[in-house]
Length: 73
Image (cartoon, rainbow, N blue to C red; front, side):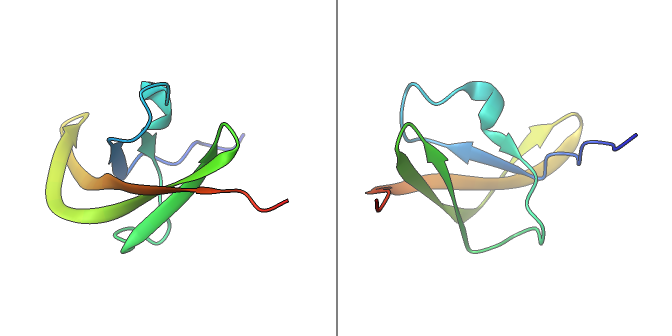
């Protein structure tokens, strides 16, 4: 059985319809300068901050929404 990796980053800001459950993610390697993910036909881009948030008793990296790009067809 494959275990799900523990979240090590929280995505703040951006679209209001972006589900709260999708904001906790696992990045490998951790503490990347930026990350992006696809949501509703666009790429949502987040950048690493110096802040952390608590999740299950652990401090995890906080990424803040920076910008949105369209997906090329």
